Picture 1 (cartoon, rainbow, N blue to C red):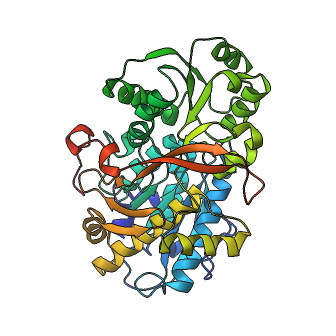
Picture 2: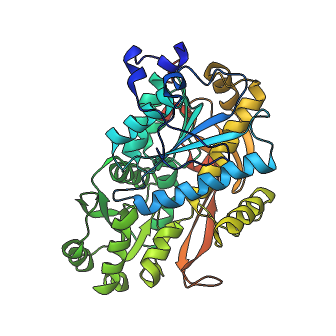
Length: 425
């Protein structure tokens, strides 16, 4: 009971209660549980019974397209753990899904509901960096392990938490993988355009820092911004096209990125200026942008053709479920849940105080290769491919071509440079 209440006080018991099914899936807040009066007392300290996993996805709002594929990945991961691996610690996983609405306050509210009403053992997901930050803050207060999706630097930087572990790349890892490569291969004159929220701001800052640290003479022609959810980029595209920029760093995702790419092609910008992005390799973006994405450059967060036993399992499971290849979102949900599973089984316990030390420093083989959750900041160390979006091959949407792979130790800042002063539990 004390673990559920954490630092939130007795008022926490007023949250909404949900009802979980026993098959590893549940509609978000589909029904109100008749056991709501006791759900708050069923904490993750329980030694038996289902392992409850609270998944947070933006199923509405500007990132809803990404949230829906993230949820698909979560469902495949849960089915794999239950049906192929025997659950976690011999207990089946029970998933509960909530919509963050791409809102930090809503994400925190839903995380509170999952922990304090549904009694989840772990929180996973949230695409937006701002939402991930908000949930991480709450999860630390509630003493609940959290695997975010958002890449905002401060999640494992100045705002690092002992309960937060990130499989997703950080913004600085992306910048270090892409900035020097882009200056050497795309040109020395860059225009930065970003979405004005934590994720876009983080890309802006880390890429500028990485370009400066590269020692390569370059010019940032201009830095411009738009609000998250912008649909008309024509005025900025016109400015970029007529500038001296060799390439533009596109620092936004979701519907914003699709609209930008389509309009950039429509107005002929991509004929004159290259586009580099840390997220345009996302399958939903390539599907949405179609031919407008072809010829642009991207950091490749997931490649369905990567040859590893773990990736073959992921591809097979996802394709069987949905008739198409998995996404980076599926990879993250899959790997986050499997890493949590390993931590619990190594600890022989679901207690956060027991699981956290097992996760810190954990090395595991995942679909895109070995990963280590670094002890100092709980950031995953992973190799990072850089490549190009090319014409379709075996599917109807643009494919990916890896040009170069950056090693994890080359792209990850040293612990003393990360600004993470890890608090104790």
